[in-house]
Length: 280
Image (tube, rainbow, N blue to C red):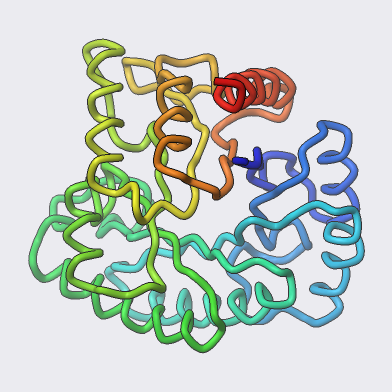
């Protein structure tokens, strides 16, 4: 069974108790955690033990599963000091994740755009940037091994790993069981001519990566590139979820890219799709 989850930041809260209350109200039993929901920065240098205990008491004790924790930093930032700070935060988050019964930490493969790691820069495709990315990732893998966690990387058109093909090359070169894929259909294209084109892109991504998908994202996108809540764009989620099911995927399907008021709609839409797949 594929559990439906949500990005914790969607709720805009800064306390685990508030987050848990919102999740229970929306009948969502799994969450991708962000340390901002504990009143910290998203990339804290350290996570006090009392903060970890608060998450355990307010979230885990209510049988809400933490399916992942965000540690996204720019892995190829032009300023090396920013990368080092990101790795320091990754270590703190990895150590906390073990106590939160979560073994997936999500990363951003980065961009040479110093102002926004989610925006493209021409140097992203250079051999020098690829080499820098691998150097950062190798250090992240050491942290993952020390803490028995998995690192999730996501093919995104604006980042260094900007396609499923490039992600496949990376996995083949690394040969590490510590690096897995986050697959978000909305991040596999910037725009598309029609819905069939999107389905083709998604299908090709599954052909390449299905064995290594640890987390799937449920974010929608219109043909013109506008991000939407799941069910309000042009991605065929029946097709996407069907491919997940056929591949034997057992990880979470995580909603994001939506507003808090859109959560009931997206939850109902995706649960309907998941139920239909299970009954088929």
